[in-house]
Picture (tube, rainbow, N blue to C red):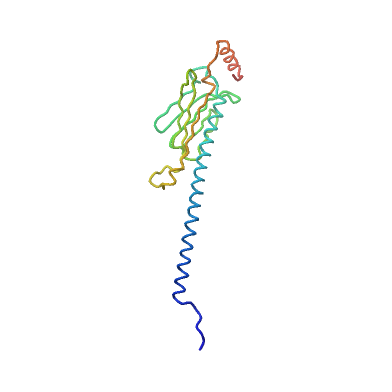
Length: 196
């Protein structure tokens, strides 16, 4: 008689249990690693979007001019979920720039140019307010970027993905002058097209 070759049922069950156990351990190891990786990537994307938005605003405020009339004075109009910030810059020629925040999107509008979307991720908060420090006026900017705004679909770990940035900016249009002569020459340079 020939000896039988093959596996017994007990051997097959033991191998299946071992494969299941090893797969479960590997799944736990890799799922935690990938979960942390994707969470870090989302947070980094949000941070990058907030930084880009703040850098655009800082760049334009460096080019801001001292207003010469009521029409060129900076204006901030805000409601609970929208904000419009308008001021004049000099980049070759004088033009009005408007930052418009509405429905999680920040747009930069410039006279004579097409509108430009600045925020790549969802912006959950964008606020600009005038503040005083002694006799010095400045702008306080707060930006909160959160790409996943749907609260019902969020996991507990994704709630930590939001990024909040704040900055204090001292634009030129709040500039105060030490004396009348300095103010006169600054306005003269400005009207002549120079920088002050």
